[in-house]
Length: 123
Image (cartoon, rainbow, N blue to C red):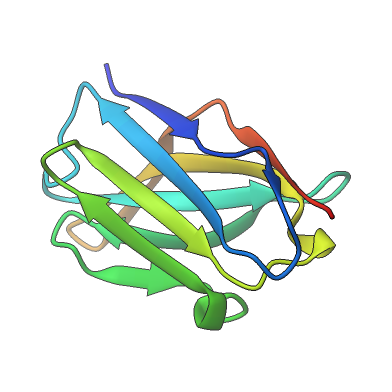
């Protein structure tokens, strides 16, 4: 039973860096062939995939956010983190962490999600 939980400040000032941590229980973030992802949803808008870190440690980012996004992990704590720099009010959203599976050239989708955490960018 995999569980994910987001944590971090709910308020960030413009131009600062948004930092969130996803704590995973019930499964290792180094297990083949899972990818640990960040997705966000601005108020009234759709879901936006931001990026992911693979079981191997490789990272992947949305082209639109790549320049501002960094995903890392701490395997000793079974956690992965999101850092989004130079934030603006348009970055206000509910941020989710999730697990994705890709194996044998088949994409299994996102099977486990955190509950999400609202981050507001405002001065």
